[in-house]
Amino acid sequence: MFREINVYIRFGITYSRLHPFENGFSYQYQIDIGVHNLKILYLYENISAVEKKCLDCGDTIRGRTDKKFCSDQCRNNYNNRLNRDSNNFVRNVHGLLRKNRRILSDLYSEGKTKVHKDALFALGYNFSFFTHIIETSQGRKYHYCFEYGYCETGDDFLELKENSQYIEYQ
Image (cartoon, rainbow, N blue to C red; front, side, top):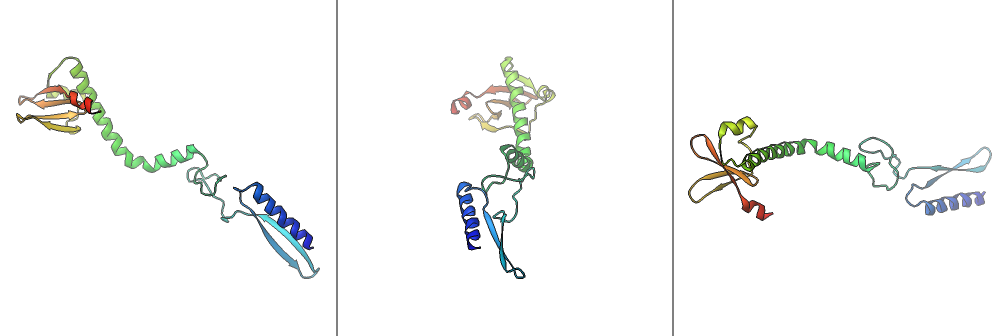
């Protein structure tokens, strides 16, 4: 009887040494009073007593005990979904800035240095979004969208300019 207990205990210890990152065995000892014999039951049991589930898809997790996701794809899906709302605003603003920069870049590369305000508006330029303002010593304000900017000349025309210092800072 005690020999059977030792065999099961040794089996559990050997198993836990061969599989150190898996959950171990737990033993239940039951005494049957009517027959006076000792029955040994061993059950494979999760240490945390609850099977861990992936936070994204809900599948069971295998491997390390501190894992939260079953795969890299699930981890990326979960974090993208979690940050979607906060990143959405930044993504929209960055998209508008890129569009404004592209419009100014196209006009400047065509050789145009003076453009009507309505022409920019018709191309989809949004005057509310720019990266910085530079005021010259003469008091003129240039609104820049990255390295391309404009200055209002007073008669609804805009003077386009490229700031070469912006490129040198990079």
